[in-house]
Length: 220
Length: 220
Image (cartoon, rainbow over all chains, first blue to last red; front, top):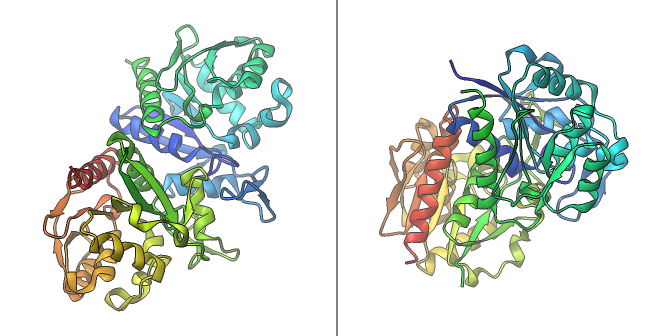
């Protein structure tokens, strides 16, 4: 039996949704580790939709689940329909959508609120002592979700987000793009990925492969 | 000096644009081969836009260049602005958008027409004796573009498309998802990728890595 690993997507595009490359490398690393990806997203409107050519907001908004389905090639579940108990682990790719759609971290920092369904999945997986991987901006959202648990996480070199993490009572760890940090006690693995905006794509892929592989190692 | 390799995208999503994973693995393989990706797309409306959750067409259409910019993280050029002579090679990821937006292959098969700007890039690169890699459905579109040159290409196990390729006078070669076919004379490298709809993502990635690496080997 393959291990089932939940992957929460936040749309499709780094400015308003899931970071596409990070999501794809997460799915690749799960397959390389012989795990089954259970891809899910909330069935909600995006906070907004951004033209990725110009960086400008556009009028016609999009739905997080429908856009995430582009990365998932249609094989995706509404997060409210997922059998959470069946999951062996969870991985959260990054992208601004994680801070805009899955939470309000992008607007309120440490005072941000979680989408309640995303909160529920993270909480249930964590309370069952199962490992969680978080990529790019997702570690900060994970800190928001876990509150007093206060994990050690990476965020790259973004000073504002690192401060928000410390305000939440969690601990920010410096980490290179192709490296990971492991919070062994809480079974949380994090990697900065495109928090380093200009990182070579192969280093981003390597960091994510290490992150996912370590998540799977917790299950051995 | 890094080799410059053109990558033509057709949107963002396999049903109406570029196949996202194939595009990402193309960029990854180029970086692993120490090449610089010159990402481009035509600045045109998509043929149509498809909800990837339901498979249904939606009312509000999208622009090929703007959607491709999601995969490119904004680092993309209008195909009419690209300095084609500067390219050392070209790679075409797949997705229905290649057959719907970059050509009319999806609707007219062997009688399809090429987008004139895409045609121009392919022709110029090929006439300069530079290698071209084509993934998934793109080999069929490449046959359309090259006409009498009649390359040997892969298309997976899609009988209709294989027949269209033969009608164009080109030759279809059977090939597994994690393998490639090399037309040494014409310097064309092809791999089926998600023409095998249910292929494991790691095999798709491997086929594309081999394809891109062989394209780069032609430049040594």
